[in-house]
Length: 135
Image (tube, rainbow, N blue to C red; front, top):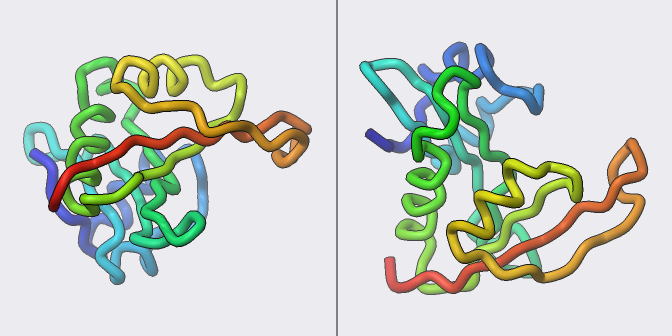
């Protein structure tokens, strides 16, 4: 099940969040979708309606390690697309993040380009987009 996150989800997200930081502001603003399995939060996605050149942007996408490769990330991407459409939805990932790159290719995202030396380790951040239909 995918639903809008609430501030009650803070601890559940922190348990597997690889990005660090505090999601309270995004949760309070209605910009987090969470995936549940068996009543447990196992994935999340944060987004902003106009976060990248005025277009919807997915900021973070994470799935608890023991729940990966079960379609949860794909479900979260479909859910945010349904929420923000019609529009061009953007997302980015590091150039070496092979699992995410495979997911985006499988889900039909188009490459928009990479920005070199933007990450702390000097790697490129690669951007992708997908046209989404009406909300």
